[in-house]
Length: 305
Image 1 (spheres, rainbow, N blue to C red):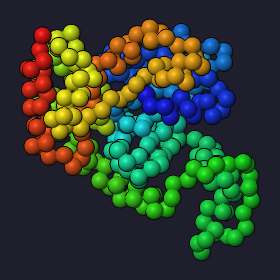
Image 2: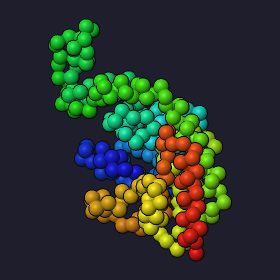
Image 3: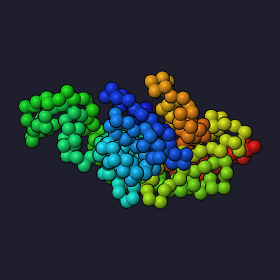
């Protein structure tokens, strides 16, 4: 249950992404399924913090340590999230964040990698800008030099100065943005608690949910319409919504390359037919949240079995 990017980065290195099924409630990876997916070719585990709810990292780290594997977190949804009081971004070998336009803070495009490994950090800085030597980073400033060396065949992955400046300004507002999202998520929870047709996203006691997304699951056996028609009627009523995500094993590329069938990942295949992402963003108002709640109530009541 993730976006294409998580697996794409693996294929860039001519490696094969190995998928495992998700949990039914959080939609995070099922840690009980990791062990069976490991072979002597396995190099790393990439947990995805779906919607901003941190994965259970303790068993993931235990498995990784036992098999000498790296843990690289996909935290595109998880700023600012915490796991047992620790900020996501300072726990595993490396953690990747996204600052795309829809994320909790944004630079328009781009992202960030965090690591506690100084050697890796230096390598990432170098490789993000054509493999240029350190002296070249500030070569147009008083501290820099016109002289540079290409130390490795790098990429053009650096965040632009303008985007970085936008990100720094956004970072100062990150906590305020999160508090707004948490408040609206609480309103959704309260608003849907009397609807057996709707299952709200859970929050484990040991985490701080970043609330990038608010994803409900429809109990479609209680409704006369399916998820797709539910979304159509929501949109017709003026409520923007989406689906996060179409599971990777259902996409043609991964289905054909991996030889996957829907039943290979039964939980992901099943919840995909039930999930709806409701509006959640920092500039929402309580009136707008209440309107979404009322619209969902109206649709459920008019489509009950």
